Length: 269
Figure (spheres, rainbow, N blue to C red):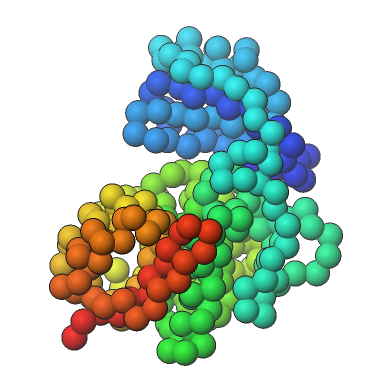
């Protein structure tokens, strides 16, 4: 994420390492962007090339470098050509935007920059559900990414539980809450979302991949909340997902954008 002298991203220098280590979480280097873990793989991100630093770390830890590359920021992940956008009455803008906005956020290098259709669908669905059925006292944001759902829920008045297994997502969500003076409205936790079921929330938002959604759907204790917002899947996955949720919830709204699907579901009584 942006810190120190850096006010925006230009190039990302990535180092993928076979293995994980707690020391990677907080490297003392002014060019360090952040770190994430994915199973047994570590990925370090920098604003500048750090071949010597990474070589020293690898020698110290006895680990192996899998990949080193440089990627223009706008080509990273789902695309990072980030410009202001609106959801309902709220205007969202990246941290470096110089105009007026309701939310400013550091999009970082994690999922949830606001450019992906599933992110926009979830934001729009939460705002609309709030207008129709709210207000809600508690919202759970599963797989919080950069924290956009958490920001909106907190701004609307909910207490938020934001969860992600990626340490960089947790750090970035905390930063974006502070940027918008909403840190007192949210608890951000690093965890596997399966480990914290059941959730104490009136609305659960889960923008996750299909396999993790199916794992959640298979837990009867997951279905104790009033409303659910699901995204992160495409039309070809819908049949399996609908069958899995059918015993516990009914889809009350479906929306599709850019080949991605969103469900708003209500618990069966």
